[in-house]
Every structure is written in C-alpha cells, then in structure tokens.
Length: 439
Image 1: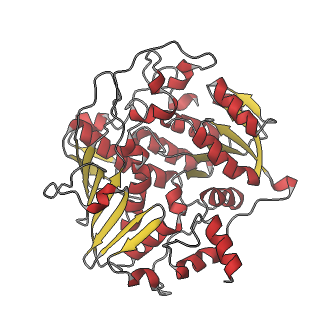
Image 2: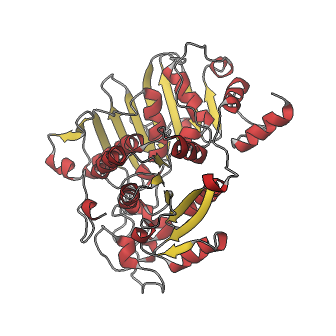
C-alpha cells in the first residue's frame, strides 16, 4: 500500500494516520475489502426517506445521500422538518410517517426517531416494500424485536440496525482475536457504559407551536407536555427508552455478544440493581446501575455504569473510568472502545491471524454495507435478529435492575422463566389506536 492510498483509507475509516492503534496488517486487510460506491447512474440511485429529523437522523441521512436522492422527510416537529429541508429542499415533507410509506419513489427508509417509534416505523416500511436502516436500540421492549425479526423474514426486506460499531475495524479485530483464543479461553467480559442523567423534578409547559405532542408519544401513555421528555433527553425516561442501559448498551453489549459467539442466542440469567434512586418527578430510567449476566458455557458478563463499583469486592478497575469493553481470557485481556484497542499481550495485535482463523463479517462502512445489501439482497452486518438479540440483553438487564433481582432466561424460546412479573415486562401495552396490526 503506498503512503497516499493508506492515508486516504485511514481517513475514510475514521482512523488517525498518525495515532491509530489499528495494526497495519489489519488496516491493509480492511482496505482490500470492497465497499459499496456511490452510483453515478440516475437509474441506480435510490429514493431515500428520512423519518425522524433530529440530529442523529440528519447525520445518518447525510451519510446515505451519496447513494441516492432524499425524496421525503418526516417529523412531528415543524422545526425539525424545516432543518431537514435546509439540506434537502426538494424533499417532500410529512408529519405522519404512514404517508411516506405510500410513496412509490421511496426505496429506503431511514428511521431516526426516538426509541419508542423504531419498531412501528420499521414494520410499516418493510410491509410497504421498503428497506430500512433503523437507529439503535432497535426496540423499546423484547416483544417488539420478535415482531421485527418475523417481518424481515416474511417480507424479504433488508433491515440494518444502526449498531455501527460492527463496522468499526477495531471492534471487529477485538472480536476476531477473542474468537480465535488469542487471549486464551474467554472467561469474563466487562462492559462499561456512561451513567445516565439524574435530574428533576420537571414542570409541564404549553406544547410548542408546530409540535404534535400526541403523535410524538404514539403508543406510550399520554402525559402532559414536559420539555425534558422530548428530543435529546427522551432516553432518560423509562416510558420511551431504557436510559444508557439500552442507549450505549446496545452498542457495547452487541460487541460483547459478537466476540463471545452468542450474537444469535444470549445469556441464561440476568441480575441487576440500581445504585441510586431517581428524583421523584424527574427522569425515570436508571442512571447508575450494575448488571451481571451468565451464559450456558460459564461465561460471566458484567455491565455497569462508569461510576458503578465492580461486583467483586467493590473495587473499580481503571477501565471503569472509560466506557468500552474488556475481554478477560485465561492468558490475558483485550480492551476496546472507539478509537482504541489494546491488550495485555501486545504481540497478538501486531501478529496477523493465520489463514485458518475464524473471520467475521467484514464491514468498514455501516451505511455503505447497508446500501450494498439493498443492491445485492444479501444480509447486512447487523440485521433484525442481531439488533434484537443485542438489545434483548439490555432489556433483560433493565428489567432485572428495576426489580432488583435475578431473572432466568431461556435464549432459545426467548422466555423469562418462573417470574410472571418480570415476564410481563417483556412487552409494553400500546396506547390506542397503535398496535402491530394497524401498520
């Protein structure tokens, strides 16, 4: 690889050419792997619609724009529609996502909504014959994921979960090293997540002009408008999300499952506790917590907020000051987070894997992978089942933490065993008229 091409690759992959911790041998492998290229042919360009025009939705859609034309934007907030129209003035604008699904010119729907809308928007898109890029966490509850997996199979549509760490070379390298026993037998996984916000109480205020508050709430219980419930801080409310357990947890626990080989299965138990009470009248999703999962092979998987004490002796390891994943094997450890991978055995990073090694799905561009799969009809790096299984681990932890006890899980039948109260939390009652069948 000549110097110019290597620098260009590292820039595209989001890797610093001067400070990258990605080994050169692996960087060269990544460069050799094909990526979807934007099409210059008008007949090959996709019609793309964005539902949910917040900062994340716009950011992801700007990444998709080279592959097609943004033909529609949709949001329940006029101010956010106006913002999207600044980028794509020719796009049709809607406040009801169901109108978007009626457009023949839409091939792909990007779902950038708040978490509690992910499932119904994605179901509507697939049933309307559209492929879907849906932001993570894929679902609000475990039951929703079962519906999405079934719809993906029934419709034959492509769904990519926005768990973009699967397309980050460092995370894939960490998983491949673990899978190939470069740190010996995997015994423990420690996942560190940022703590959530603990604020309140909050006051109701008039609904802003141009904001359809009833539609924003959708299937969730109706409450009077509180500014802190909407937009950026929605994820700190149990009604709409699961706090950082499901927000960042959907990223890092996904990588934990991938490395351990449980990405299409899961743990057999989940134990959890909250470490601080939330403020009455304020945010309702746990802000500080400690979770522990056990797997059929004896693997222990701990997940905790960054200021949470470790379960063993109450000692905070240095890794807990950063969020990321630490894999502990019988011979050493690997630590990986965004922009960094390191190991207690440095040579395993610089020594290429042999040709006989187990290799994982190679994607170095999450949106590019999705577009490539839309064109080829092959499965993406994070389809519905993977997104569902990853966030199921998060949901199980959140349920265990809210109840303050251990729950038993059957990953094959996807059922909570012997605990009716915990099992009831696998689904959320939908406020009428919303349900799975009306979409």
